Image 1: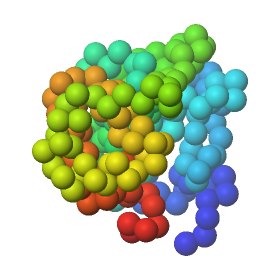
Image 2: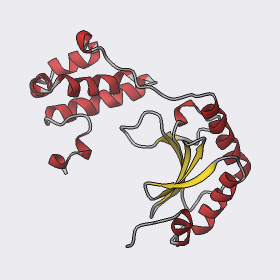
Image 3: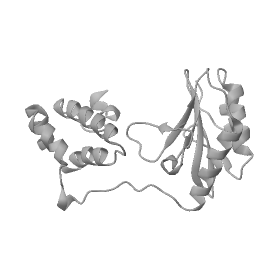
Amino acid sequence: MKSVKTVDDFYDRQSIWKDQLDQLRHILQSTELEETLKWGMPTYCLNGKNVCGLGAFKQHYGIWFFQGVFLSDPNGKLSNAQEQTQAMRQWKFTADDSIDEHLVRQYVLEAIENQRKGLVHSPKKIDPKQHIIPEDLAKNLKENPAAQKHFEDFAPSAQREYVEWLTEAKTEATRNKRLQTAIEWISEGKPRNWKYMKKWK
């Protein structure tokens, strides 16, 4: 398949979700956002800064908010775009969903206002000189010798990726789920972002 060259190119090539994407595009175009193409996807910017993006896949389509972590999300529509992302949030639609244009516009306008305020998520960094292992992680590593050995063999930066992932969890349930997953991956010698490394594909 030829690569997408323009935004119109992207929309013209849609077959499954064409009408729905046109509807979302109309909402975004009705705002002050500038329409452009980035990573082969329509991206909507304010003063050159990414605010929203649209994407389409076989099972769903959706709108991505680059700094979605700051959105109030009163209707609970947003989810983390990918496990490793921290700021981006997505609103996924499937064949069973209808598009509430008024509601979508509310989310978009809030995202625009947040961008205007300069709200940008800065991941918390751990001071390399104060590499503190959280108590719950340390306890679970101690109970799993294989994980303990692999974790100790990790470079400090790889250890920090796991620590940051745990400490950035916003709820206890999320943290517990991440901790369980972390121990499983570490026991197999896998770094935090192993899914995106050639060695593990």
